[in-house]
Length: 464
View (tube, one colour):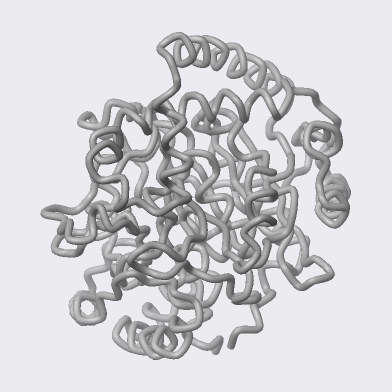
């Protein structure tokens, strides 16, 4: 059998049913791996070993009684530390909230517990989900399992690193300008930003009310669909939540792509923001493979990537300032340098800037909607470069904004990033798939077809 720490959620669930593995055995194996590897990776801010083991015993007892809550029953999950887990600190990786104990579970945690999942603990993030890999915070930054000298992407950095390294099979992150898809890209795993409004954000510390999403990070597309099934659903107490009939997100994973129309947004990485040659080669290979699998792939044009990025920046900075202004005025020294630098521009945004950005946002949404009337899914870059070294802040500052993820925070369409190869330096390169509103299932369908046709999901980082 596959080593326990590399089991996917699907495989773990099957092993539980076959009684070849128990939740207690799985959590025990994962705790041993965390003890061995996390000192090198810093994926955890707070490991809840006692709580995880207690939940594993309870899940095991329910299995013995024939009570299975769902496919995530007994499956361990890592949780980004901006998401409330009752009795654990929600620090947002910041001195500002270092003693902030959550009184209740976030809605997504409630849903995971209802599905039988086991919460392993709270994962490293960029400070308030906006900073970067920083060494001036209360906790060290997470590192990339492919090479711990490199960053793992962010801001859901610990969630991505932990899934990649086999510390747990699945995790939750948040995505305001790409923060689920960036670690998915840097760590070579699968990260989905669901349709805006599909997953509740209640109990998640906000960064930007109209851009924030919560989404799953996994090693396989099937696990991603399982996670989305568990966490999706209308929450009337979340103003951004939408009542929708969308569900059973893995229902089309085996259908392949024959007959689907895929629009390749080449100008994002060819002219708007020229990508690293190995990223470009990887994207062309993705298009070739999908064509070979029966899809029709044609070039499509959207507004400039730089315009999408600019609109995202104005909205994010304006909304984030409305949240952080009191603390930044009264306690600026408790912020790390990177997050303080990224939050302060919001103080200089005017109402006219914000309203103008929101008006242009509607036009950008309309442009993507027009493209998706002709195509079932869009294909484009995620990161324009492989990850950079942790000890090279200048290169990190240069490459971090070089991405095509923020357009789909602006528009709210579902977007998935996954591994599309390894660079000559042994680091993942990635691809992004984008779909119609509440058609996350088709995005997952295309991703699953690509996954089956390639070996990348079977690759493991050399960390151990």
